[in-house]
Image 1 (tube, one colour):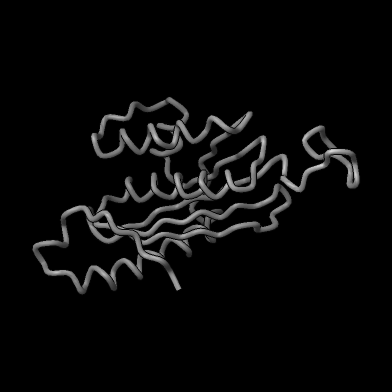
Image 2: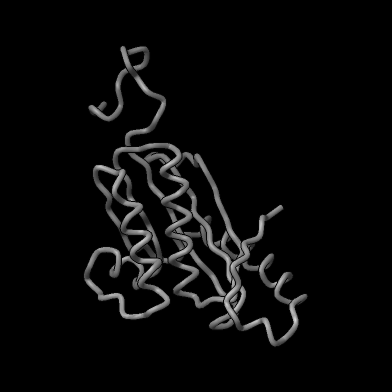
Amino acid sequence: MTDADPPAGAEGASDAPGYLVVYIDGASSGNPGPCGCAAVVKTPDGETLLEKARAFGPATNNVAEYQGLILGLEAAATLNPRRLTIRSDSQLIVRQLAGRYKVRSPLLKPLWRQARGMLDPFETVEIEQIPRQDNKEADALARKALEKARQVDAKLPPEVRKHPQKKTFRLK
């Protein structure tokens, strides 16, 4: 037991977990094209607490990855952990968030700033690059959201398809 996890029944004990792991992913069809992103929030022992997915687009794959990160940070914040580990198969996201790569793209800079600002409530945050095969749940959810975005995109007039949209779509 750590100081982040008070004993059951302790005075002032909280149901909020002290430590969470967030798996994130983004997917696009075309670059730019319809997109989906997803986040899976888990306990350190692997219990899934939340799954979130969002369909949107058109956007690039890197924008989709950042949207997955933002979605994951939003989901984790609702559970109010003190410590957080973010796991992604995107080398770009991991290295930009960790400060090892500069963010040069004007499309990514505002998303990077938003994500960095969302880290403030957490005492400690780690970000890890993981192999794609270790990110199957978030990948499957992102692909499901991408499929929804494709369905919506197919109904749009051709002249609208490549221009960024402000809409997001709810999965059913």
